[in-house]
Length: 575
Image (cartoon, rainbow, N blue to C red; front, side, top):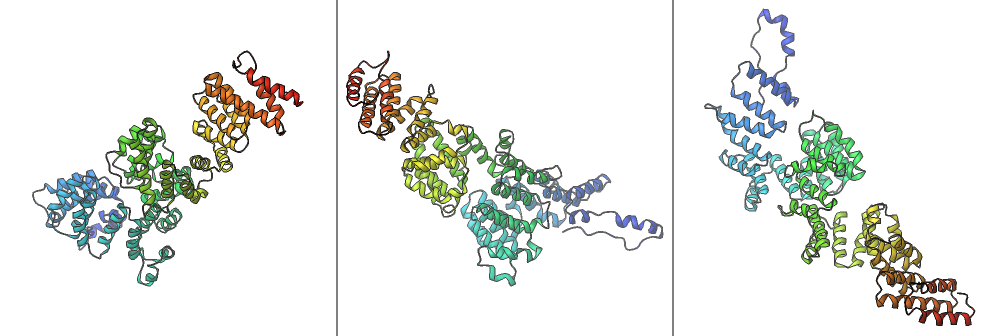
């Protein structure tokens, strides 16, 4: 209960002249009503300095520290109050509860539970124990305290909060909807989205619930809806740290990191002490990981997403083992955690060929993609596509990727995966278009990219482009494998000159009998094309025969060149 302003019953005449000054002198209540907790603390410190030893000064100091987000100082102040010999009964009845709440916000859940057990029975105690049961994974305690919740706003808000924490976002929205809509708007209770239109006309008693609803829609990937609901709250509280942070997150999802960072800078000043850990964390995300190793390690287990984002940063920097160390301590409870675990498993499989890691990756992707909450989301469909991709079921991969293709028009990673699935299912023209649209130089220089592009060129009757890629890759670790792929594909597709060039190069590098047999067969294929009078076949035959001549020619090359040359002379084919 806020202290009421004290006022003398009568004023002396000598004080009349200074009455105006006294009326303007602020009271503690003025600061509290304005939520100016720094000003309130300054006044309380002044009172203590002036010799006021009333325990209520310490109580209100603790209360202000708590609302400033400095829960440790609040807890210390409450403990100091608890150690007083004589306490007001109103303080004694609530002090253990106050300490328990501080411990809860500090993440000290066991200590919070112990303090709450000492507090008298009340609705706040049940709500706190409800949250503690969730945090401590005490399902029995969760059900017990859930049953004790009543149909009052405070209890229903706690229920909605736990729904949110357990990723039951629609259930949380349903609770908030009942609290926000007045009787005259009851007809909107069964609507999915239309009820949002009347939010601007509802009572301001629960204005902050707009932020909670916006958070739920953000989690459901309805970023534009989240922004619309959030605007109702920001119109009245434009300096809110939580709302400003959520707006920045929506901008990040809808546009880019730069737009989000500009919004977040408005609430990252020293004047905003609440939520600064969250702001620091999100700035790293918006800057695409810049400063991650400096900021995120200290926020692990402080900001829930910090551990996962740090693991993601490790993955992007090709450190899968370090990412696994970060993910292992916690059992996956969110789709992002399962996705990261799957990606880590794939990376480790690529390095170790451990089949158990591949199995874990497939299971994790499938679990997310088939879940009721994620199956119709973009990440959910990506996960199902990934699961089928790893299993080699590329027709199913295309079913899921085609459904979300319009969201990733210029996304290099999506185009790379989409192209691989197209190659595997024989859609080479579409695959070639996707591969050529990729801009990332690391992808373009990878063996998988070059191999897919070479196959597409050959299958699209442009084998000379594949040969050019092989020539440009000469001397690299992947050159031999690329030559083999282009040689065999070109031979099968009847593009014998390119096949002959590749087999000739392979024969010089390896010298095995298979390479000579491939070269011989490709040259004979060129002769066959010339015999069929195909356009340009004579010139190709001349180039193919040139590969069998010279000082480094194969010892048995003459057995191929002589009869073909004789046949060409008889048929007046210039070679």
